[in-house]
Structures are given as C-alpha cells and as structure tokens.
Length: 195
Image (cartoon, rainbow, N blue to C red; front, side, top):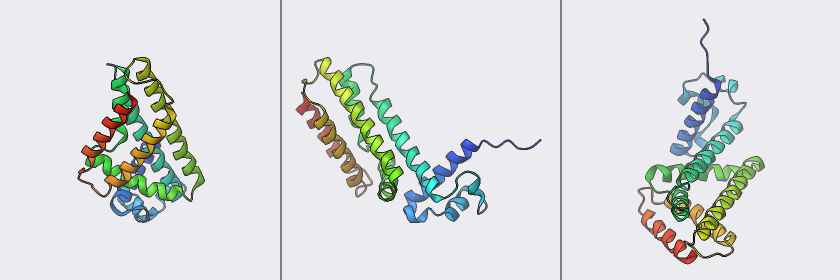
C-alpha cells in the first residue's frame, strides 16, 4: 500500500523550517537548498510543495501573521469584562518574552522582503487594518462598559499600533527582554489616557 502523504502538513513543516532558518541566519540564509537540507528533502523536492523561494517566504509571512492574529484574538477575548479584553489585546501586541522577541526577528526580515513584494506588503497592510478595527472595537466595548471615556478611538489605535511595531523592532536589540517592563508601563499609561 502506498504511503499517504499529508501535503498540507508537509507545507507547514517546510514553513517552520524556513522560519527557523530566517531566525538563525536572516532572510539570505533561507535558500531553497538550505530549506530542503534542513527539512530532510532532496534538492528539488520542495517544488512538489512550493514553486520557489518566493512562495515559501509568502507562506512563512502568512503563517506568522496568522499566529500573531490568533494570539492577539485569544488574549483580547477575556470574558470578565470589556476592559480586561482590551488590556489582554494590548498586552498581546507587544513582545513579552524571548520567544516572541525572536519571532519579531523573523518578521523584520519578512518586512524588508515585503517592501519589494507588493502582494506581501498588501498582506501586511491588511493585517494592520484588521488589527486596527479589532482594537477600536475593544475600546468601544470598554467605553460602553464605562471603563474608558467615549472619544474618537481611531487615532489612539493608530498610535498604539505604531508603538507596538516599534516595540517589536526595539526589543530585537534587547533579546533577553530588558525593555518588556518599560512597554508594559506604556500600556498602563495608554489606558490611563483613555480613562
């Protein structure tokens, strides 16, 4: 009986390998040859799953954005109160441990690549738009609950997203998490301003 291969699982494995290679050696290190070798494939075997490096990079970027979105979504769905959900959402957007900081390193390499790839740039813009909508919704819910003042939340969402992206980049210079406490303080100040 022929061996049944789960092609979707293989694609996920290849993406994880690519992510690990980018994390260790940067985007340039993620060649088709290095990905195939690390994944245990013969040269050229990756073509069964991805037509080229571009498609692996795109899948890696999509995977990371989906993981970030999932984590933010999960953290922002606190059942206790709308204010707790808002706090959870904000906390989840700033890298809070060495593993999340390392994921930012992969994102940074992919951001650079997205500057010359319009499809990936659009994917990231879409992610940011979705993130903004979700953040505004949580602020509105907290306002309806009376936890924060009613106001135009879009500028606050834009400010916070910029700060969170900046924190992701700056934390790369402090991989042991020395700046995490500082960013948690920023979240406290941001919520105080909303009140």
